[in-house]
Image 1 (cartoon, each protein chain N blue to C red):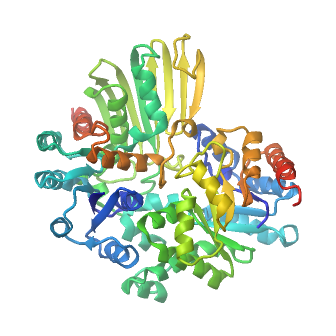
Image 2 (cartoon, chains in turn yellow, green; image 1 turned 90 degrees about the vertical axis):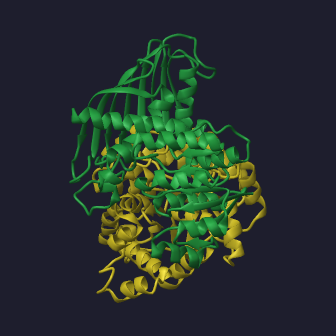
Image 3 (cartoon, chains in turn yellow, brown; image 1 turned 135 degrees about the horizontal axis):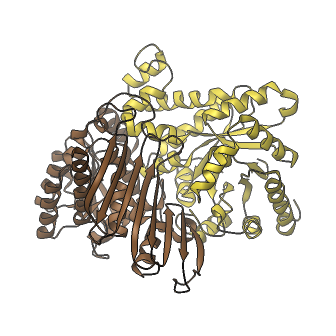
Length: 291
Length: 337
């Protein structure tokens, strides 16, 4: 994994502190060309990986990448699935069974052999595999060396104690997509315990890690201790804590932590992308001069 | 350890179950749902004891407390049954279909001295608790008007009908969505006293409203408007906000961002005259387990602490949720006029 990963929240009006900014982003990135332009700024700044949700619009972005193979030959995507709001809104309206009926590809009850059998035999892991395949369709022909499970699902499974499902995700993306599994979480220390106990060694975990202690369940001190003492590959996200910390302070903090393999950030403008990248390089120079 | 049983493992129920499962002081002694698929998945992959019949769960698991997340039409009878058995109750919002039922349950819970809580989670959102603190401190002076709003993309095209599209069962935007805003106004300012006029508007649904607009007056004389629409896909998810005008200032807040204007220097510590902006990141205490929002963990933690006697049972009590049910009834009546 590269040191810096480019995120996609800004493209899809995900803003953790302001609904107004969300709407402004929605307007700014209405056209796919605006997203591509911003991705190009990220690439120019030296970033080679885009970590993104399996949002419907990402399919269009993937089309552009495929149509310009020379330009994007080295470009990687880390898909994060599922795009949860799609399912959450559907569950409110259709219930859990109704939602599966809508989103499991093919005719849920019949024509698609695997799906039909999976449902009738209550083979839930087979249903999960079908959902993963449905979400991965858009990335055909694009390098996806790490595939992530979104935090809402990871953390739900964690709370329910369903570690076998986490393991099944891990194993399936390896087997079918020759990719490593990543887990996004708001409960990093607790998740690491469960993954280790389930036999997943040196897992890739993407978690909210920031100077403000925002969304660091169990507390900042426990996160810092976990980073210092445990074996796993951490990706820091929400490093700006939604804007609660100044960019300089925010980046200095994550760069000073041990064991952070990658830093994930998103930005809308060329200036912000370049500024954040150079801040990371600057503080890496201070804290990890050998790298 | 508090022994907790969960009845209804739908969207909210599953989320509560995960939070209970991760809570260090909770022993989940039973999960009950009528869906074969849900129960079989839980039986196969979780370690919770599972049941199809809640009466069987009560008899076998003997919980100290239950979390009820079933369709609203079952709330009244089920909650009464639990209280009569001496079981503490957390029930999802909205509380009851009819205010009379909620009043009875409020009295019953009081008489039995049982912890009672309803899932209006906004009261555990950092920005809204800060709004309450500013209002109670009198920092924006006498409040005279409010605007309560919520928008989101629940029903954005004509679709298959479920219990949520049946008004007799607690479906529709008023009970499901607008109730959050009404409850928040009830908490921040005062309970609704009267509703001058209301519009319950279907947009894509056949039998229920998808939007609610109402003009209302509160017990303390403050008047204001309610504007709620769950067929608004310009919002990625539910967005709830309040604007409160006072004689010495103004508050505009949603779950993420609080903007407050003070006319003079008499403001809380950390604020100053003019506009101030605070973010939920500054106002939210860290939780031990996070799923979908700190407020969901905080409200369940509060319920467990109330059972353990560590906090008073005074946030989201049946009594306060009953006032929201009364307001819902008033909004319906105003439209029929």
